[in-house]
Every structure is written in C-alpha cells, then in structure tokens.
Length: 186
Image (cartoon, rainbow, N blue to C red; front, side, top):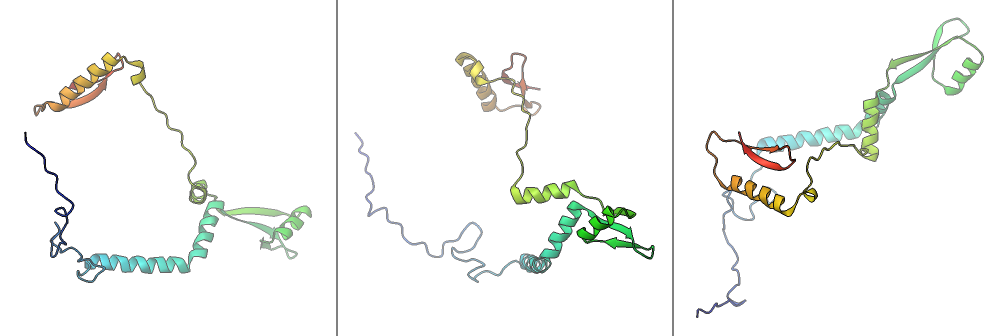
C-alpha cells in the first residue's frame, strides 16, 4: 500500500519573493504611488482637469443649487400698476397680498415653466428613488413540475450543452406549449 506523506509546516514555509515580475512586466511593489513608475500623461491631465472642475463647482455651488431649484419650480413674478400707471414687478409676498386684496390690476407672469423632471431628479437625489413596479410573467414554475419532468428537462439541456453544435446550428431557449423550457436547434 502506498502511504501518503503530508508536508510538515517547516517544509511549507514560503520564501520572500524578490524581484518577481507580475504579468504586466513590473516588479512587485512598483507603483505610481511609490514613484517607481511614471504616471500616464493623459491620465494625469484628466485628473488635473477634474480637480479644477471640482474646485470651480465648489465655489459656485450655492448658485448652481439655486439655479436648479429655480428650474424645478419655475420663475414667476407679479406685475402690478403703480400710482403713475406704469407696470412694476412685485416680489415681496406681503405687498402682493396688499395689491391683490385692494383689487388692483395684477398679472402673474411665468418666465420659465416649472420642470417636473428636474424636481423629480432633485427629490430622487435627496431621498432615493421610489420603488418601481416591474411586470413579470412566469410561464412555468418548477414547483408545478414532477421530479421526472425536471430530470428530463435537465438531462436534455445538459446533453445539448455538452455536444458541440455544428456551425449552422444555433441553440435557442423556447417555451413549448406544455410550458417547459427546452433547448431547440433552429
């Protein structure tokens, strides 16, 4: 009888790898971060431009948020006649109420229509996307099949997968009338 000899822990010690090359041709430990490898110039340029972009967006962030909210809610204002009969823009909510309650002639003008998609995008970013409904039609459930039917379907599928089809053959998974998934050559 042949005896199996297992190696001891002393014989399984791994010697440190020195100057071992990776598949890329670099030595282990040579990285861009260590300075041993020069970074790819287009990548460095892209990172520099991205840093500049982030810095500029950071400086203008409040204005960008205000512009996005204005686009979502739309830009409207009220026009009313003053004592001289000229049209003026009214922005103060209290003054708007006074003029409307006094019965003065006023118009509400919309310069930019509200955008529901932008508002939805803002809400999705703040609170996460709402749950979506997906319609799924299931034609056959394994629980409705007998063990013999499952075994037959699996055996047929395995046979088709293990045989090499000819160039003209294409394997297509179709649902037959008895609602079992079977492979079929076209």
